[in-house]
Image 1: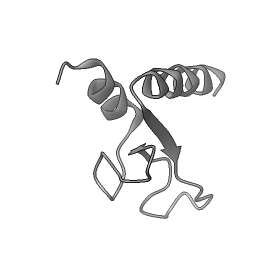
Image 2: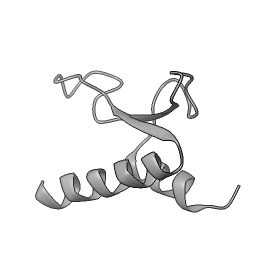
Image 3: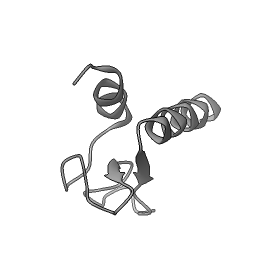
Length: 67
């Protein structure tokens, strides 16, 4: 769990440097469809990633691949 939190914080800082915000699903029910998913949003609140949410692996790929 600690490694996951460290990774999440690293990606949060990476997103911030690119002018984005990393948001995490607040669901606590493991059976919920968006449990454990993340979103990237611009400063004005417009979502950059899919509205249904994506995993940390996909977030990392999005932030590290050149656009």
